[in-house]
Image (cartoon, rainbow, N blue to C red; front, side, top):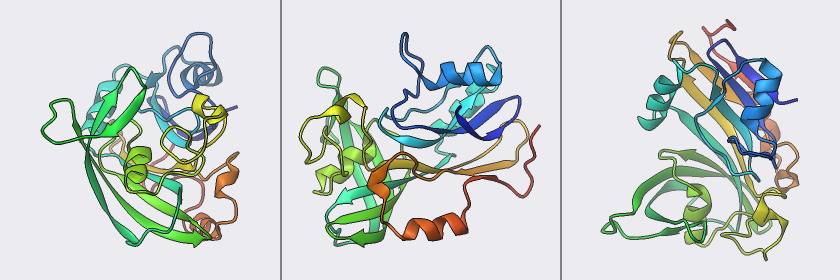
Length: 239
């Protein structure tokens, strides 16, 4: 059963488990397929993507009429998308902004930091704040401003602070995580947007589950008290 945080006849906000594909794929368990079974609707449109080994809050459209509006809101960066990341090392700057130009290599299935002059490069921007340090690891709150493939993983690794458990861009040796079978230190924690039909704010929080890489960080307990898991809005009501 996929945990539903908010649902009406237009869309569903839910918490994706680690190890599950976020988009439809033949012969493999995936979020759209399971949500169709769970909700009983014939159409679930994927609006955003999370890597298989990343879990957390996501939104899916249940209506073909609403999908273009939601996609437009995302393209205009009118979604608030925040992540929790566990990275190797202690960052000298405890908060800041990262800006790069990223190039995707489809043959290698990897993304690299490139130059602005490269016509294939796409601008990537995020802001971050270090919440807690534990040994030689740091818990970081990341707000995506753009939404590029593997953006957080690439930008932090490029600066010498790769995500814990990341075999594609990090320090760990190749293993199951390369196929999405084991989690990495990344979690989609917070999603907020204005509903395209009701025009009410939908705000949802989901905390790491099934990902032991976040264990031992005491600041997560305080975050849960301040922003409890689930959805909230002063105006929004389930339809």
